[in-house]
Length: 245
Picture 1 (cartoon, one colour):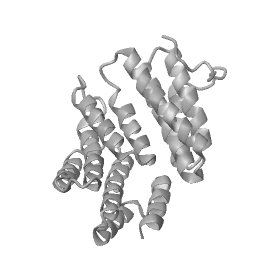
Picture 2 (spheres, helix red, strand yellow):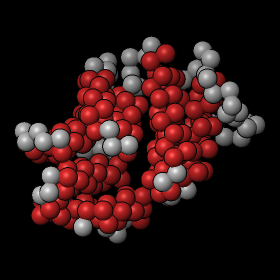
Picture 3 (cartoon, helix red, strand yellow):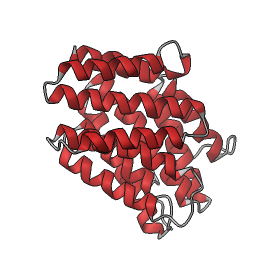
Picture 4 (cartoon, one colour):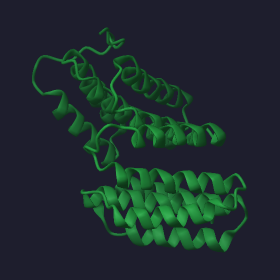
């Protein structure tokens, strides 16, 4: 299978795709977004040469997240365009491979891209596609139950923002489901819960329900406060508070 990434040439065999991928994740969480972009691209290229499209798509999704952080922190359109390219490539890798699993995460990240660009109807559609992909996957290798609940909190928040009052109960139900199906990694669980409250805070603020928005921000702050691993989330929360308060 042609990779389509001939411009990304893996260096001499020093690290594996997995090692580059792990490095990229750590760099992104540490705020070194440019290094995260470069190492995620290397990881994806190596995975493709190994015939592993699922991991290649995951690495492309990691690259997308780093590009998105660069756009959010600099406002430079080139980073937005690079984010779009990376996530569209991630989706394409899986679809072209014909794999039955692995499509949910790229579609969910595509929804996040549409969120960044303010295309909320497209974001809602991509989230629904991601949920369908996870629910129809033939196995549950990554704890899909919790991931489905996490996506459902974001979807409900966006639907509430779009004036669907019934989404409030769906958000509450999804949050409870997330509690019942925690991520096996405690760090990721904190990211999921804080994100849920932040998305709902934005939804409330968009509907001029300021007291409810402040309550959600307070809940998110309690989760991320004092945990050095959550530097990116802390920065995102601080930026969100600037916009909403």
